Length: 132
Image (cartoon, rainbow, N blue to C red):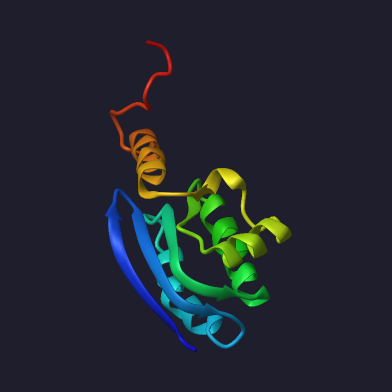
């Protein structure tokens, strides 16, 4: 099976990348070619990988996620993943490829995090206060 990739702008330097199919040694190079322009653009600081339709992830896919995270973190950004299928989540958990704080169960949790990140990165705004 192949890998289908859709990319959309999230605003304020964010991109949402939907993956559908398999992320393995055959499909990872094509994904890398599509994502490389985003990673070479300093304005892109947050990449959200939506994995709801990702059926399989292999070692090449794990390496891709780790490298993407390192590239974004080097410039103060972040890689987040959401909507993991149970088999994909199990692989990521086993190899501890991503910090658990960057993995989201649903859109509400992810949106709350993105709102906080954008407030920190947009001049003149501040993150929400934890005091009432």
